[in-house]
Amino acid sequence: MKKIGIGLVIILLVAAGAVYTIAYQPASEIASPSIDNMKGFHSTPLYVLNTTLPSAPDKLMVYISKRPEVERGEVSLLAKRLGLTGNVSEVSDEFILTDGQYHFEVNKKSGRVAYTDASRWMIGNDKDKPSNLPSDDEAIDIARKFLIDKGLMPDDAVLCGVSHPRIVAINKTGDVIGVGFEDVKVSFAREVNGLPVVGAGSKIDVEVGGGGDVISVYKVWREYVPYKEFSIITPEEAFEKLKKVGIFTGIKDVETASIDKVYLGYYTKSASEEQTYLQPVYVFEGEAKGDNETRKFVQYIPAAPELGMELPGVKG
Image 1 (tube, rainbow, N blue to C red):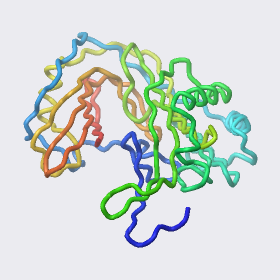
Image 2 (image 1 turned 90 degrees about the vertical axis):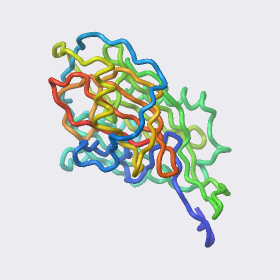
Image 3 (image 1 turned 180 degrees about the vertical axis):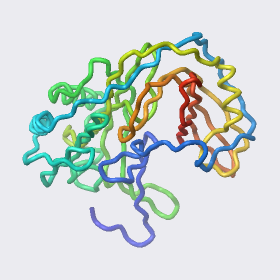
């Protein structure tokens, strides 16, 4: 991409709200910190509940995460199916293959697969432009077919969204004056025991670029087996707990927090973290205001305190 003259700024705008800041490692891969060492939590704002609290059972099944058996031979076969050439190397907890154009990783702890066309993904180029992209519906079909053909599509994957990661050029007044890169990201999620799985550790993202080419795949899809049922707190108790521990927004002084959605789910840690249990949580989604700015937030409250759990926070 040609250099932009003085006065122009290149920024990353990702429709889903995540910013790609680390090569081959999406922002969601970064471990969620505990409430004890996280700045931005506030327990004093006015909480406004804009929705009804869900009904909940007295107990929920807790699942145990199965550590995958990731072997070099299987990784090599997958690399070939993806069109890569060369030998797979082992670095720490990763199997890695880079052949010049493509970068491919498989994490031994979680089975996470990351595949990237390093010559195009999130890099300004002539192929990945809005005018060259397939429609969202076409991108969904392309993503599904790619995952099935490469043996990467789980039976329980459910389409959960489509977004458009972009690199744009803006002027001093904030107007977009050019698009250096854009693709279509097709995302899949899952349910366990009829509840959504939340957190960074259970998702599939397929990014489709110009001409319908798949230029990035990110998959982490741990296997879980039932452990036993645990008593869970009520939604009302979870809401009171939320008000005590606060929310994480990144806003220095939160004045009001409007809660628009509350539901039960299972929380998964990021692919780089060890996970013993798939734990039930209450998920609170909403919008916080303060310091002359507004930000969305997602906050998790452990539903089975007996298991213990560091409290993850997600900044909107």
